[in-house]
Image (cartoon, rainbow, N blue to C red; front, side, top):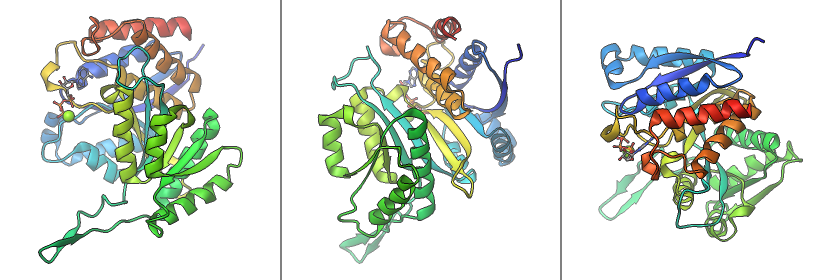
Length: 340
Ligand code: ATP
Ligand code: MG
């Protein structure tokens, strides 16, 4: 039987990037679909030898594949993540954060959040300026378009996964900016009446997530709230280093045009080339990519298999286990073949 085939842009990076790439290729061979990887070398060496042209190529390959998997890169003259975000107009970040059963944490309650964050504006686009000696001011910017894109993405994701959406801001105080945010979210929510939606003040939400985490699923927020919430949630879940995220760009109809998936961790130069890197985060990034391609069964199986093996104690050294990058990858691939 012919396996369906999808082109996937793969952005090669630095440090542990090459061994993560090999792990991904090994894992992809175990899938009942074919991923045709189109590599672009975004390593420091690649960027230095090709100059700006390497980004032209990356953008072209990503636009044509529509989905991309990015390995960690070092930030030198420029941050490749920032360049790609700007050039591809990636305006929304989707960051799942969930407890990994068996991975020890201080917080013992199960947490399973999908944080959908507007990646631009809020208070982050303006560093501010002093006013005289003793004051300073900065702008807070909220625009309809990225809010609409994030909201449409969040409600679509909710519809596909049967989850509920909580939008959160400080609309009672930041009436113009956060008020606009909640109004646009409400307009989108009205088009998806089957998706449960509620609104919480952001300060109260932080307390409630800690008190009753099971009540929260998809959380839709402006830039800085998403920044704070992602790190808090990662701290609670103990999964700072094994998280992945999707960076999303949209067309004029607020439909996903390109999606770039990456791991939360960096290049880990201290263990590069030693077969010690934990590929969990890039596997979870690949699982999100498969979901974006519409291969929900395979994406879910990849995520679940990886988590199940971690729970059974099949872990790399950073999580207290004795597996190498290669043996962990083989274990996930073998189990995935059995399940699919
Ligand atoms: P960068 O500057 O690219 O962010 P870094 O030195 O800050 O690199 P990180 O990748 O952020 O390194 O990671 C910090 C620590 O976590 C390092 O000791 C690194 O070895 C470890 N680490 C990060 N990612 C992984 C991984 N996938 N597997 C195992 N250890 C990791
Ligand atoms: Mg780092």
